[in-house]
Length: 80
Image (cartoon, rainbow, N blue to C red):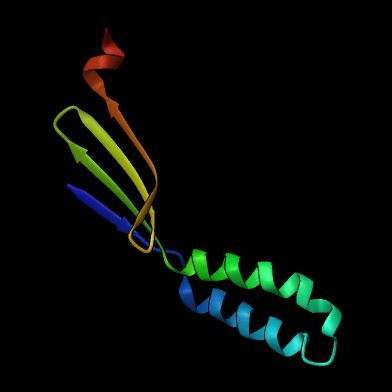
């Protein structure tokens, strides 16, 4: 069984657009806005996947097509 999850994109995009409008009159906020924008774009493109198999769990975090984190738990290894 495979479960998929993604972050709530509408709220994150709303925060990004709000940050763009807030920095329109203040050029010194660009130092904050650039890392903030990169973080929000990476968060919007994040994909979480949980695979439940026969005696094992696999948790995968992906950003776009790049696997950032992968962890496999095996019930057989835990019992030994």
